[in-house]
Image 1 (tube, rainbow, N blue to C red):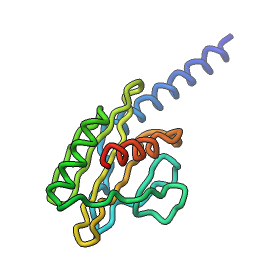
Image 2: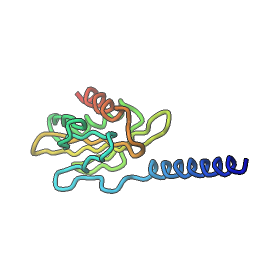
Image 3: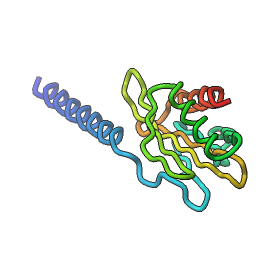
Image 4: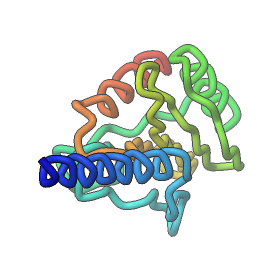
Length: 151
């Protein structure tokens, strides 16, 4: 009987530790976001991310085409994010947005980045989950809906 109690206590402590880890990871913005030499952050090893700047075909998406100019393109991205819902822009710079999408049921935070490459006439995109290994395709689905809303 003592063994069962000890095993149960250890299991509860482990579950609590995992939950605390996930909570902390979910609420803290990951290091390394932003644009470095014209590139968004590299892809994680886990399958829960997509980017227009990756060589990994499983995580690759097409960049957004520019509208008339930078101002119109940024406004169209903002309108797409607003129409999607549950996305808040946290960093807005001249050629970069960092936004956070919050899932409705579990309240997980996913980081979305947009790099406005005026020279190429493209908006590079990266979306990555903060927590977990698999996102069950959510980042790709979000990209597909955002690009439809943008066009």
